Image (cartoon, helix red, strand yellow):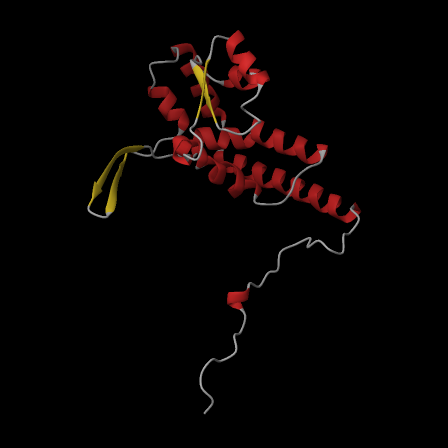
Length: 199
């Protein structure tokens, strides 16, 4: 939490967490009390309380790392390095996001309106909650970045991560009762026998 706060360009008023035990615990609660942060959580069984956060599970996690199991110190180091450096810069400075501005139900359908897509960097630049000095620092960083090079660096880091995963798998003992990889052909893709009355 301290590392995240250092990288955040605005003051924190509180934390609104998910309901998992990685958040709802005495350590985080005491931290919030000590730092005078309001600590709230989403309601049980109401996943849309954190809709903007939940969608990042796809765009920032699954779409990048996919569904492989990374559980070694080497893999953790590579993932932390990726999110701390290249991926963080690419997502915040060069990937625009849309914000929902209006949602209206018309009969059985819902009509949504979104604002103009902007990167997190451009939204911060328009914000009145951060100082001009911080904005100038962000602008200097933005002008020093090359999005194409960042993309190449991300791909290179992901290759290293996959190689670490393959090395781990090659040294693991094989459990004959466990599928190491899913079948590439699902049942609905296979040729099905013809159904009907005999001719």
